[in-house]
Length: 486
Ligand code: NAD
Image (cartoon, helix red, strand yellow):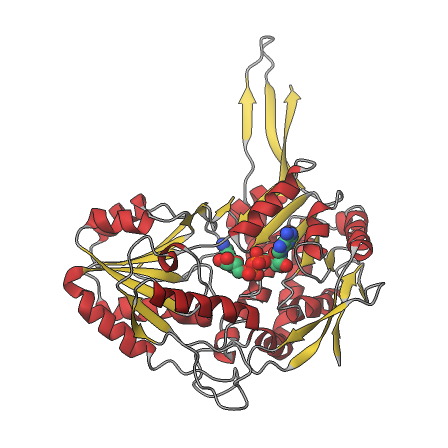
């Protein structure tokens, strides 16, 4: 039976009290192995190892040496690509075609992406006059922030974890990672890679467990943690913000969304359908940036609904490795129950089910898995819970609009503000509408097109702070001003 151990100070360790929990594959519910659950002892060990490593050999590496070590980590992930791929597909059930295209290569690339930014980002400098006429020179100096707690979710486990670990280490910090309880494998495997590449012990640590009353809560409350970076639900973000307030620690929160697509009559319909297929159904709808609300200009509404549901009906559900499969299960039985509760609620709230709405018949071997049908609704009122709340499943609601202002108002009518997609061939309109949308990321005629140098984060209840490019430098370093009297 496979065991997922903690990785502390360069070594794999079991929980002192032997406490474990199951890791099951959502494809067929088979038991993949037992995960060790960290208690206060293991979290304390990990935090102390990370703190000590801040003044060990890691701190003696100059920037170029650190960057070259992280490039090695990226290369080694790519060399062990198949192992990472299998681990990720087992934990999440996602199609291999997707994970081999997005999760693993982008997960590795996160260790390289920040090197150039780091090497080329200027810090400010101001020359000032003084009464004696000699003047003074101010300049900014960046230091690593210290021990960073990284709390990550299950939807893109390796990618979203390295999105934080990459820049944190590039800036000279050390980390303690708490991966999602549903997807422990690739984070565990990364420990081996760190050792193979010669990353000093204590720089990268992993503790497994749940959130409340478990590893997550213990880690965010630990006094040796200097800053917390989190991706997950908004409610959890609120709890983590409270934990971070003790000792006034910095936070970066990337939280939930209820993202809109706005499809204008002057769009290129082929592009809009192709993009909305991906934004609503990729990764079985479990992408924070995904579209769950689609607003379509009335004159093309019927055609859009027909084309999207015709296309979505061709999605092929199946095992990650099966030929042509482009839709896996959702991540767990618990999440399936949540998604199915919204499918039921949609009907109670008066939706017209255009497609799906239930559980697919997958055959005996897969029926124990966390399968749900891709689903499209129309006809709900704007105050329906299905329109207001994040479902995080392969589903969307489509609603007509009559004017540009109405589309903007509808898109903004949500407590969330993560992402939006606008579909129009009129550039002036795209610029106008994107300026009005209350989101952190707005795509025009595309979706999920990411340049890692750009800002990433959410407005309103979708998060606090921005990561990516120089914005990651802001979070992962402490900027000090040095003033020299000349
Ligand atoms: P979640 O909030 O349930 O869990 C995320 C992580 O937080 C897990 O590791 C969990 O164990 C931990 N956690 C839970 N409670 C905690 C606590 N009290 N203290 C410390 N840690 C705690 O989220 P999830 O279900 O894993 O992920 C799905 C959510 O993530 C969705 O809401 C999605 O929109 C969001 N998400 C956001 C982004 C983004 O960039 N904005 C990206 C991906 C996912």
